[in-house]
Amino acid sequence: MQNKHIFLAFIAIVFVGFGCKKDFLERSSLTQLAEGNFWNDEKDAQLGINGVYETLQDRAMYSGSLNIQAGLPMFDGLSDNCYNAFEWEGPGNFMEANVDPSTDWFRNLWVSCYRGIARANLAIEKIGAIPDDKISATNRNQFVAQAKFLRALYYFNLALYYEDVPLILRVQTLEESYVPKNTYNEVRDAIIKDLTEAAADLPVSYAVTEFGYATKGAALGLLARFQLYNKNYQAVLDATQPMLSMGYGLYGNYGNLFTPVGEKTNEIVFSVRFVQDQSNNGELFSGTFLGVPKGDMLPMRNLVRDYYCTDGKPITSSPLYNPNNQKLNRDPRLGASVYFNGDIFLTDLNRAFSGNTATTYGQRKYTRNSTSATGISVFSPGGQDFYVIRYADVLLMRAEALAELGRQAEAYPLVNQVRARVSMPSVEAAEGTGLSKDQMVQVIRHERRVELAFEGLRFFDLKRWGQVEAATLVADADPVGPYAPVYRGRKSEVFPIPLREMDANKSLVQNPVWN
Figure 1 (cartoon, one colour):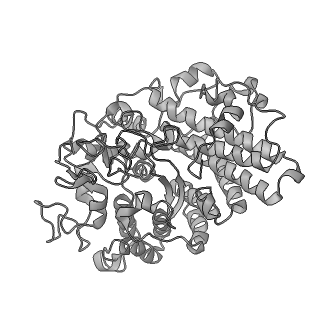
Figure 2 (cartoon, helix red, strand yellow; figure 1 turned 45 degrees about the horizontal axis):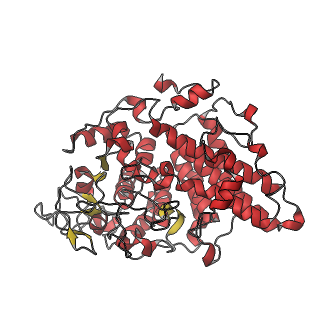
Figure 3 (cartoon, one colour; figure 1 turned 30 degrees about the horizontal axis):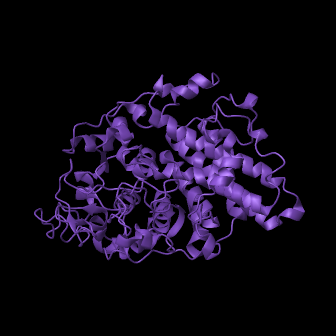
């Protein structure tokens, strides 16, 4: 899978016991899978690990949307960044409070995460039992470390969106499947343990032909993200420090980064890989229409206005801002991320965007700009990799942790690296020297928004900053389509345990927020 291939035969043989129903609470016994005819040698271990990665390509995970369901790349629609014009995909219904525990969107993500966790548990157990003469110790440790990284990634998403969830760290029999949920703190500790152990055994890099498998940097980057969420700022510094000397860097062309050209650059720490026009492992998040770019996820006006002018000043104070030409003299990341009226959005057809969306803008970042070289429809699955972690985010996470610890002077060069890539003024030139802790934190928060827009991280940031309510009010004030965002307290910040999971497992207790 990570070489842009899905090992379908393997998945059919090894994971048939639960690959069809998709529900970890309703699956057949995992202990009965492939006993005696698989997990025998290093080749089997490799195929087994590929199966753990494969779940990342689920529509509910990293490959959805465009009229199907919104996967994680679409989760900026849970914020003030993006308007989900197709409410049925998920984020739109969530923002207008038209959801409850029976909403399938909640269950789809839950089921995909637990399917990935079950596969990771099986791989960890079975690879650990392969005879020593059939696999080298180094490779065994690396395979197990990859499974732990992936298990942590699946649990990271469960912890962020559902909080208290069942913590399952070993292969279960059917009789053991009906488990209660654990506390967030218990899940947190398990994620940190998995990522710490994974980082110890994963290599810094692989051969070019194996690009895409989890590396030491991937484990440290995800650990840093999770520790940032938990406000453990020293741990963020500890995780990111080794990454500064691992060969990562910022790709010179921000506009090309989110196209196939940027997929194997040294800015990509970990990505989910896809193949163009392959129904089984293509993605839909980059899909567009012939008459309008993307159509379902639309940049909001407040986000567009938040990009500074090229002098490093907001549009409210910069003499360079021209309201009649919003893209002129603006941060280059704006034009690389957003389509404006008159922009060509399908290059092979020379088709221009006419501003005919609910927000008058179109999403450019991660949106394919051609009907494909083979003439295949724009509605077919695409091949754009999704970047789960990239180096610019690592630099900004480290800068934020430094600022939060009162070491804001050390954050300047990190933010400046990110800005220099797009020729934006340094912090010293734009905001000044000697910034206070709070001032630097605000600089970094703004930088995260414009650097990481449409990468599914805005809700992650808003929730940990305690700004979901404020962002919802901002989104509500945006003159967009037929629904108005509604803040419902904690219901706007945590997903419910899906009703069908509650019905299947009487040991589960609903999050009190949703009772």
